[in-house]
Length: 123
Image 1 (spheres, rainbow, N blue to C red):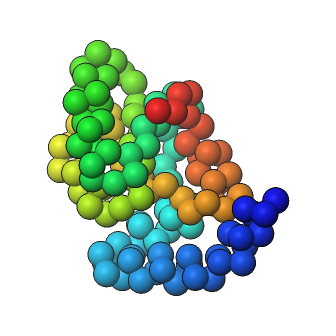
Image 2: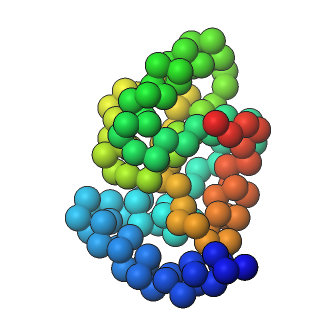
């Protein structure tokens, strides 16, 4: 309960900070997805891999490449918190791999994210 109050209290600052980063990186998608909008449904058969930033993307990339090779019919979604992490995923252009930004930690944004994504597995 205290955590939710903390998030609610600081939501205006999080909103402005997210807007500022979106403007810096010229990314409307970053802004929308961090607020829980603009996700693409994958049919409920998605394996979701979250990598917070560049270091985690670089660490997870060999695993992701192996999974894509082993399960070519499977859809994968890789979420990041940063535009730099997103750039690495997009630069590798792996088949059946979609990138999205993880929503900010609010009930509404996370519920929208999970409702649209419907992951069968989260890593």
